[in-house]
Length: 607
Image (cartoon, rainbow, N blue to C red; front, top):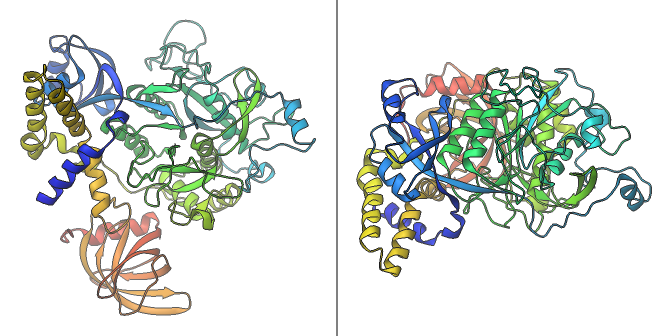
């Protein structure tokens, strides 16, 4: 434990605190009890006495957004940490669009674009992603699927969106009558919502959201055709980023919650930040538990997300598909973030042609442009298989990625998205009726645990008191501010430390000690061994044979009592002494996962 504390202290001081930007005078609070309980009502009835005013709430998640009166964010968090009704309180972090800063948006008319291409037909990208609208536009399931583009808004008058009839319509809302007809808390939200101005006017004052939305549509229809065909994908524009491409965590959560509650099947998130937010984590988890796919841009800092996470892309929720940007030659774009353990696959993100506000077209680069190709793909999969849940959608997207040696060791699949092959695989897949359960690890909640009250929140309190006592000493104030902000990062630090310690990539599940036999098939060779540890994500295999790190094996694992057998494929992701190997499951269905769950009941957890 001492070593862990040393690592934590080192990381707290080494993290770039400049990235920890948040909205001054605002916090997000989670209560321990549901809003209708006496305890929660008692707390909410006294918020004004606590120097707070409610700006919004998500009752289903017990989350609240407060404005502060005459106190700092640090003061409020320190005070609320001692409140028995509060599970946690955190700053309202600032998030930004994931477009490269160097991108200059040049406006082109459709005629000018055709002239540039020498009269040839246009596509959004020259990369070989196999987006063939003639193949993917014939679908066997739902007639429409909704993609919520959580971004800077949308130019709803652009011909691409009007001709394709691609803008989502809230059929339960009467336009322009000034009444919340569907009682969802939003007046006249006919086509979405603007969380910057708190209105139904979703116009894009940045170009970013309109460009992203055009890319989503391009997976299903030719956005350069005249007229644009009617699209089976409907765009739900939710504006939470302003004209400078900045927004807050609170508004991002509101947008996620709105999208899920109003029927969105896929959420595209071409934005992010380096600040871990537990409330944002919970919102993404909420989307997962509703079966909604969540596509996120990996970021544009040329960083390794395994060691320098970008959120929400680095969240370990099973529906998150983190996307890096690639070139037309399938190499990693120079600006793109990457991460073998945290980024799923690559997608075109360099000089992408798409719609921009004002009725024209333009080029943009960034993981912002890479993500919507994948979001559009997820939508096409839902068109063919309306009941397919986000866990299986992500699995199939991973399995059908095209390998690229340029992406080896950079993203988990070591590949770039293949739209047509993935749609075809989804079309003929056996749809799983359930997905593995997910809840945020208790370790991520250390700030409200008993241990943290002694060494966590108690330390926050002490730092804050010292900060007040020494407020006239500039150097002491700066040092204590750094420590305080570092402690606010504690959940993210714990996540990072776990990744550093974990021998198996992206550990999401409890591991159990088990003693079962296994038959392995590597190519044409058949081997035998024992499984000494198992989880829903993988197993430790003991065998005298030599297995190649990164190799794929097929396994027949017997239950502890020898009465049951599961068939599963896996990837050798690490090797240890004495011929013990970690194998990460590559393909698992609900029946396999249920069997493992049954086997491990009553077994001892592995350290």
